[in-house]
Structures are given as structure tokens and as C-alpha cells.
Length: 331
Image (cartoon, helix red, strand yellow):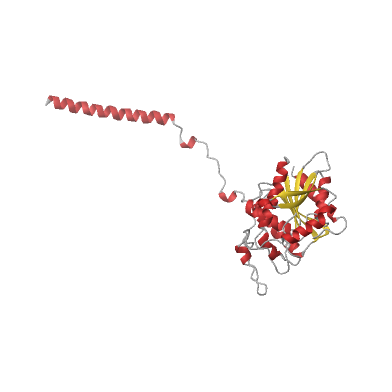
């Protein structure tokens, strides 16, 4: 019995000791830790409503990639969208192209004729001209409009010669052609034939050790270039210049939205004050697409008094000056 009383007494004493220690620890901790009243006030964080709004990019809801194409008489152009950028049974008029080249080849006085090698042993006619300045800025590739040639007196020859005086090598490349009556819708199926020609033009400069390559296009040449860029991107060029972009024929609409919203390289969209109505009417849409790409160096400019073919005196020179100044601004 005495042993049990001793055990009970020891247990009570141990419990009291634990309680005493716990109270003592609590008092010491309270003495060390500051009161919440003594803590500094937390900073006031701004409400989400006070944060600046994210920049709003233009909506493209009303600019679908494949717009609705109205039927013209018995012709339904929607099939052009289904086969866009694919080879079909449609082919360029190679015979007419060869006739045009034979007529102009001997008349090339500014620059040298170059035949660029294509697949299957074929070649494409082009005219190369070196920069007239000691310091070379780079190389420009020039693509002519529908049904014309690489030495066309309007727009193309002034550009390919004029850019050399600004310090640029120039290479004007023959694009695929059809008969004289062919329209924009007729040309759409042969756009893929232009892709290889653009590729070999780029390779031409690469072989010369030139990496600063600018693609300058006019009219349907711009459509062909857009077709190429839509499929392959702009990774192989430094900048793009579109002269008179968006030109089509009466009642014909651009088959696929221009890929300006996906382009990473700077774009200059330039057109004449008296350009085709379709070119001027679609300028706002082109700018919206360029705004989505959000390249701060891209620009849209108008050449005063100029029509689509820059025939008004002095307008071709203005075009060259504007293009060169814009390229210089890229750094």
C-alpha cells in the first residue's frame, strides 16, 4: 500500500512540474514576442481595378482568313480557297514567258542577265545589278506585277536601277505569267510556281555572302510573295516592301487574307495617292493586320500624285526615296 501511495505522490508531483514548466515557457514567449498591436501596418496593395489595362489589339473577327467570295455569273471562286497554295492542273504560260524573255534579253543595258537554276534542270530569267556605292547595304529582290517582266519600264526598272544608287544590289526576277486576258482569279492557282523562284533568288544572295535581303514586290507580285510568306514564313528575309498591295479585278476579292498579321519582319505597305480603288480601300485592313503583328518598325506610306504604275513624273523617284529611307530607319 505504501508503495502505491508513493507512486501516486510521484505522479502528482510530475504533473505539477510539467504544468509549471508550461506556464513558465508561455510567459517567457509572451515576453519575447511583440504584440500584434506593435507590428507595422501592412502595405496597401492596389486593387485589380486600379491596374492599367492591357493593350487592346485590333479584332480580326470581321477579317476571316478565307472571306466569302461572291459568285460571278456561273463562276464560283470558292474552289480557289480549297486548293490555295497547292499545285493543281493549272500551269503558267511558259511559252509566253519565253517569248517575252527573248524580246527583252538583248535590251538589258543596266545590269547583267542571270539565269537562276530551278528544279528539273529548268532556269528562271533575272537581271542582277550591283550597288553603285562603295558600301553595300544588302540585296533587294524585286517581283513584277501580273503579266509583265523583270525589266518592265513602269515601277520595276526604276526600282531595280534606282535602288543600286542607294547602295543596294538588285535582282529582278521573272514571275510566272498567263495570257494577257487573265485575271487575278486565273493567277491564284499558279502562285505556287512563284515560290521556288523566290527561294532561288534568296539563295543567289546567300551565295554572295549577303544576308540583309529585302523582298520588294508590286501588284500581283505582292500576291505571289504573300502566298510564299503564308506558306514558308519570313525567316529568310530581313524586311518586306509591298507596292500597291491588294490589287485585284472587278468584283474579285482577295482569296485568302494577307498574312501580314503573322509576319515577324518589318513591313512597308506603300501605295499611290491615285492607286486602284481596291488598293486604297483595303489599306485600313492591311494596317489592322500589321498592327496585330505589332512590329514597331512597320509602316504604311502614300506616294503623292502616284497611280498604280507610277507613270506621273517624279513619282517613281519618290517611291525609291521612300523605300530607301524606310530601310535606313531599320538600322
